[in-house]
Length: 336
Image (tube, rainbow, N blue to C red):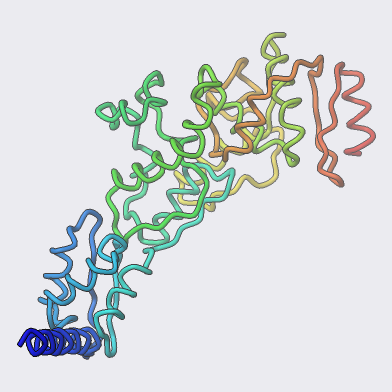
């Protein structure tokens, strides 16, 4: 009798498995249907919406299958287009592989270039939405982002928009966009240097200057030394990259291409707090966004007597000088 019972149970379980496998493999025909998974959507809500949109036939089987193989945790926010025949495993495969709209922020991009890129990709819609987003908007998140605490609250997030490839939904809120950038900055720079650096913002400003001035990373510490030496000697920094920043900001405001173009003597008289040909001392905020490698080089603190540098146009090496006479000779040798 027990043997017969075991056989019946085994047959029942086998039949149940076959039914479930059949349901999993049963395909649903979907005609060009858009399906959106929003950031923070609960898995059960997603399953319910898939059923409601008739992308899946059996919500319960979908839930059991996804929980059984762990894919319920891997579904990514995004906008999906279903067009064709799909079984449950194929639906899940789509939902876990879509990364959203890809946007790559190169090292050295400034906030105007980044905002323009986000608008072009349809991630945000309004000009100046990121540019005018200031640290004051994040005062309730200083515990999460402690590196923002002691900075002028009216300054925007230039310098904190870490260069990387990101994935966003179309029409993402500016708060969510900012959160993604700051989370990455925290992970890639702050967590790595928080115990080794005093004022992280000062280093970030320095890093942004050398990022735009130096081609080879091993030249960075010496250029930092030049900047610090010139400040201590009460000399103008005279950094061309700051003039480019002014021009690119003005171009962006006036709906022109965000380019620097050829610098002229006229540019050296541009009215701006960033003009290091007119204003002594360090600028008050970064002029671009850098990666960890650049930031790490800035932290090396090399002491030199250098006060000048130029870039060899052929090798891109930075040529240093301790005196104006030596500097002028370098100009004649490398730039004439």
